Image 1 (tube, rainbow, N blue to C red):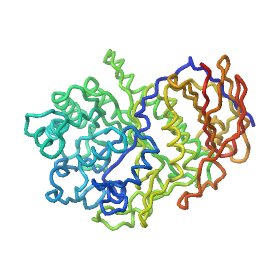
Image 2: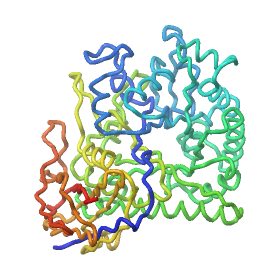
Image 3: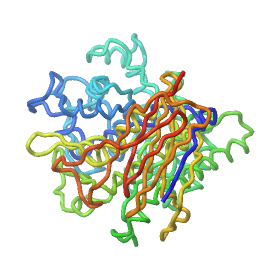
Image 4: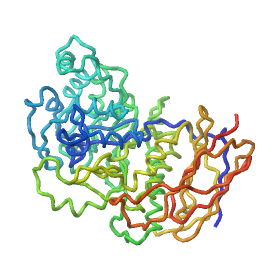
Length: 501
């Protein structure tokens, strides 16, 4: 089986917004408590943050982290998480039926985000709260000094404003599982009025309106149109959420269909882009609404276990999917799909980051380990820099139960002009055949092959709890204008080239 791709650095899809490699931390399960925050852990620093987890997150090179939710957001009082810890209230978290101690709050998150080299993507509660609470939070975070709330921030240890730029206007507000779910009209009006008030405090904000929480919801489509009709002038992004797994009539042995689910993601993105642009045309606007894909991942392994969890615990084991090798292959394809849509998807957040449907796990013995999905995400986040190039690849295709013309060779190429580096991400979806892969650089001249790795050879249902999964060298040969390699069946591969100046 053969496949090829032609590298044309002048043929650009879009510059890559680094925020495409964002992640998500919610006050849910063990994401925070015994995840990123554990004062009694041997590696904890003076703030109670686990430095072993910080080191793992730094390896992922996550530039932006969405916080504090998620479903947790819709009943959260941000004031509970500021001030002396001894005076913070313990609350019932109605979203996940946990006890929330509020020992980790706004200031802790900002200090932690700084330590992992990420900026915040903060959110305001539009479920049980609204305009004034949101405006107050902006004043507390971003106003310099001289008002009650800005001076309260300074009294609580942050002399300078947090200067948080990106904010989500609620979370999944059409979802019947949300505390304070809204109709499209109710949310559209509230979001628009809240956006106006927030911008009165700080006119530099970037605001994300909630799209429908799922394309499977009956609200999908009408929700987007109603919200954008009301909010178009006062927001910058529309959110999308999508999770994948073996659902409904999926057969867990139906690997060809599972690995084709990136086609669903591509269709979803293009559909929402069309909705945004239809409203733009109708309004005769010159402004373009881009997308914030602020929740995406594989999520299905933990569903049965979660029904057995006793409510009202602090940091219970919830949503702790243990990912296998086939999940890593799908994550690689989903990442490449996000890159291919980088002209409109400017923010994306892998949900989540630690312990809860996460690439990083902590165990009962105090250790930290990397899930299978850690590896493709790490490589794309570190090496997918510069611009995305238009795909000029050829490959045999297959049809699955849900999808047609799925390419066995799934690939995307990025080019970083600052370092004259071309990076090719490539996956062979074939279950038994090796793929002979040729890269044609045309008039470009290869100076050298910087790196080539492959992630393959594991049983598709195997996970990485024992730490045996690792990246391996990928044999490849180059001449001045070409590169050749063999992509193993069911493999994730990365090749990086330095071009001649």
